[in-house]
Length: 534
Image 1: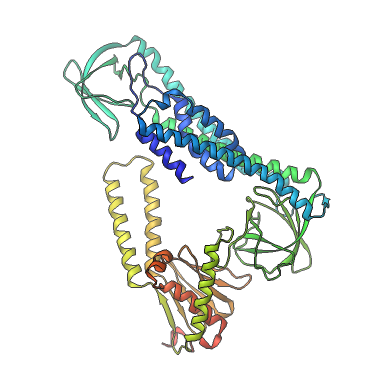
Image 2 (image 1 turned 90 degrees about the horizontal axis):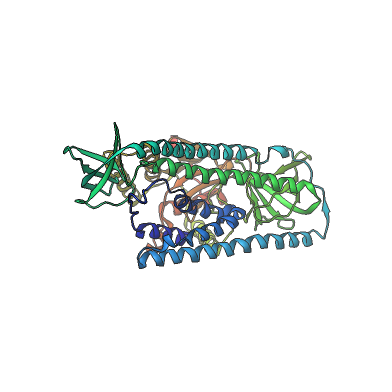
């Protein structure tokens, strides 16, 4: 995906500027714009909606076969060739994924011993509501995109009669700004006029100008610049098709789940960090989650392991129904509200991020356990409160990043930002500053009563009875794990594990995770006094 994005950007950068002439004036080139903008949703569909990518890939290949695209220099032709190769590879990968789903269903049917039964109705959502919200939102986005496209076409048609009846005179180009794509010309009465330009112009050359009263346009670009509305319409159309397609596919899969008998498997399940984890029926130690998904009724607390029946084929992108026995002895029937993912977060995963375990993450878990065992061996009972907090390096890096962010935002805001840049960069800048502040001010204090976790806005107090340990993720996030039915407490992204491994110097967060877990396992290592007594 990264390679395809890079070569698409390279192809755009190396492509020559369009040449506008009176015989071939520049206007709203919908075919070229739609082909270029289709790459963005196509990249998304490759991962989340392969059914749509199966259609978009050949459309993009047909668009790339246009001879006009291959008129650039050697660099552009090489980039275009790589784009074609990437599209072919992605198309083949999508076909392989869709064929694999059929094989997965056959394997599930074999695992169920050939037993199929009708799927029960769910308690959390009605069938007719599956995908309804996404369908409505997608339809609205597509309608807005269609309205914007209509305004562009109507405005272009309104310019046609004016262009036909306008008088023409040659004007000399005195300035051409490639930063904001404007061209300035000198008219016959020595006045200057600036036009928004789509094509490329040479200073000193002459261009024909059409004039009809107050209406004035370049004869090479009589329709004006509608690029902003055109791009916004295509972006909304791509987003609308994505959301609408996702809703329709979800509804189609949910209906198919109830249309005919489906395989049923006996499994173990629990809720953790807002998702449902599925374990094999004999994995009572919950060592290897095989599936995870987001239910309609989300809870951030971790529930106890319980027996369940899984209806449907647990394949990528499929729909499932889970009937589980609750603590009260009743059965809870719930359906999936998100795509099915293989695996689940291990003990070092971020809250809400679910991915299968890898060799690297397994090595990270082993290293974390080794640090806990070392802490159990060398730690002595603490007399006063124990604190873990950001070190001088993290504080210096965070302060430097905040200064750089403020300087970049100041440079942007003093340069006349567009209507979309102002809110986009403001929100992004505030978020990045909050991340840096959290990295600078985090602190965890342990006393005889429990842990006091200082965040950006408040301090969380966790009694020792609720704490089950602490983990330092490969992404640099420190999380205090809590018992079943108590939310975990994330401290935040507070370190740089790759840099710490390269320097072979454990950071404060890594040490905090090991020592907190050691205190949980060995209560005698906990401080004897509380914070108020020091």
